[in-house]
Length: 81
Image (cartoon, rainbow, N blue to C red; front, side, top):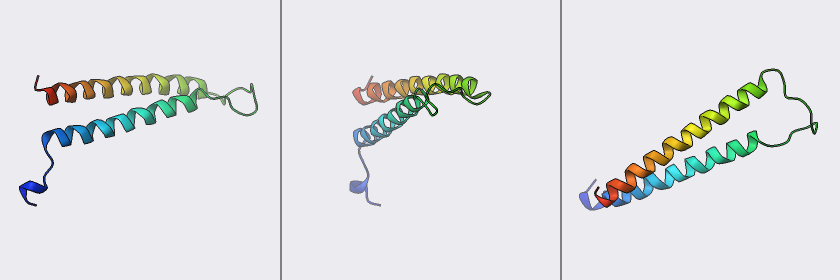
């Protein structure tokens, strides 16, 4: 590969930020599904499912926070500081 075919640093950061945004959106969508109603309406979750849902939501929240931190690092690096 020739040098002129390689992306610039800003191009790499822009692509990485786009993928991080996609990942964060996917996590938000997953959290929305976990907050959804289910059939039968008002029915109980299977045994252990409520605890699993709570743990999953906590992990999703932590993952979104780490993505935000990664994005902050990349924005800072792109600005040079």
